[in-house]
Image 1 (cartoon, one colour):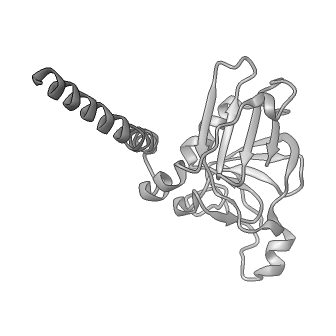
Image 2 (cartoon, rainbow, N blue to C red):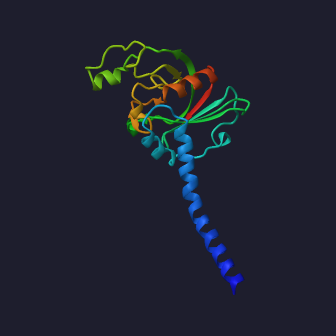
Image 3 (cartoon, rainbow, N blue to C red):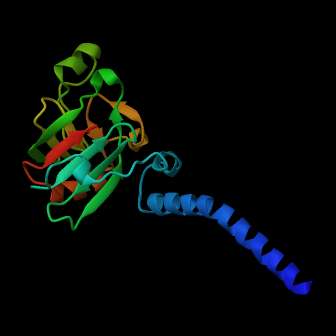
Length: 198
């Protein structure tokens, strides 16, 4: 009888542990992810991290020539794979504020700009004539500390002046990253790095 009671206890403890494991793993993953971010609203990023989707580069690109960037506008994340597959990065992003501003498909990096000047597009100035004609590099620059121009006119992957935008639909078509993330990406990518927006 005593042996049966012990087995029942072990079975119950094992069952409870199995039920708790997914919640603990999810919480640990969210904490591990947000722990790597030194700036920005942690709660917002923690909430968004559970929406990240796993992607394999082969599902989107034929090869990794010059590396590849996947901008997932649904889960608001950027994936980067280096050409030799030794580096993979996943970063939270801001994405276009509406479907009207969202462009999907393939493009590539055509220009890398350190400490970029921001000049509002003609469409932005039409919607908001109060915008400045240009913003010089600095903390108020909407492009942050780095900009990666794409082959699509006016589309970029860039840093951000307001970290509260990360994880939100907040841009006029661009993908925004925390400045320390775009600085790392800037150093890894080259002209011709392939990019896909989904």
